Amino acid sequence: MDVTYTAIFERGPKSWGAYVPDLPGCIAVGDSLPEVRQLIAEAIKYHIELLRDEGLPIPPATSTAARIKLIKHAVVPLRVGTAARKTSAAKTARKINVISATIAPPGSAARKTSAKTTGQKAGVIEAARKRSTLQNHLNR
Image (cartoon, rainbow, N blue to C red; front, top):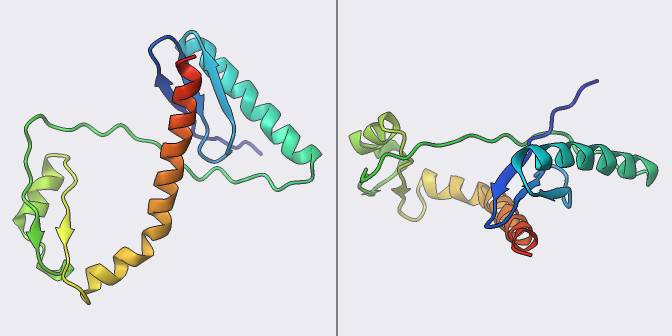
């Protein structure tokens, strides 16, 4: 069975780096993008082999990546209200590929659902930590 893992590539001041969000600790650093592509592919292979040898579970490939285009000088106003009171500002934001935010009052449905995203925020913080570690490697 073929599995496709998402690799994130970053350019540093002197080199390139890559990491795989679904495989914590799986990173590669190289002088060029083609080199780091080859190195991360090998790193994934060896990382999975090591997990198998140790009898540890192989994490599923669940991450995806996308490039988001932001339009220069696009300003989307923040609206105060419940999720049910979304206005044309949010619709406009979707049209111009800008993410808008809604500030919900305490006790509203939007406020309650934000508690569910705490785990997602923790994942974002963990990804930022990995990028920081990778950036330290790139700057060496």
